[in-house]
Image (cartoon, rainbow, N blue to C red; front, top):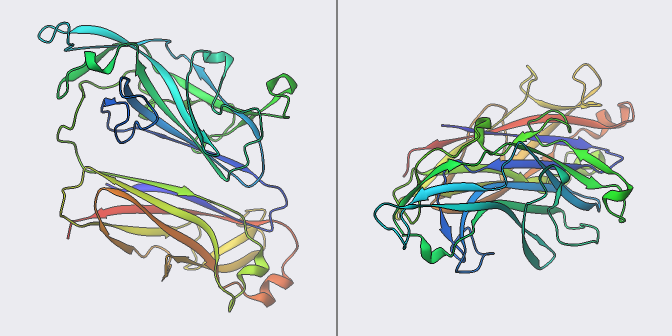
Length: 348
């Protein structure tokens, strides 16, 4: 198993950009409100995590909004209940989001569908460098209705896709919106599937409780930012351009796990280069990457060890740019696209 994510290096960028990523859940488990992964919900609520939307930006923006398409209003699951623990009953769920702006966390049902639902409960600009909205299903019934260590079957309700947008001004969507591309779609107008692979139903059976689950790694990038070329000259301190996050779930307590991290791009050269306007046929400037404290060699795995269940972060830095080469290069914006792959290794 390996996980792949893309890092885009941007130098001398004259305008800020908003990047949007969506990470669908790949292992479904029902949770009671207040438990790990469902902290924003009350203890009498019963929820199912669906996915995570992450916005990264170095400029303010307004009213991030999700537009659902081909998505049902209610989702029905069949399984044991306190009313009927043997035969079971159908119960209904609705989609919701949880997000935090500043220090305030809010939950909102996503009921408007194609009419759009705000992902942030504020009429002020989003100024934090990273904004995250978590998607859930929330039961219409109290958590006490459900029986721990039971499983539930998704019987009806279709998951479709979505697009995202921000308001053009502080006046909200009445003054127009800008659609944002979600990484991997290629276009702002191309909908992103809610579930992995575009399936419309959650595969059976979904457990409630803590059944044996496969160990799971997740890779993401946060705090991606452009840099000034002159700040990354050789001999100067490296410039941080992003942070890699690896989340490990369902690890065996007491065991130590690890991953190999590999950096590549589409160039044949053994070295990394940023190119004018990101075009490999245009002017090139060689650069180097540092992962944590390890110098990156293209295509060569870097071990990241001593992991168990939890979240692990490591910074990515750029350095090694020749001042003479940079000053002789044509003016403009330079960029490169780097693919980061993690491959789990055997536990230690």
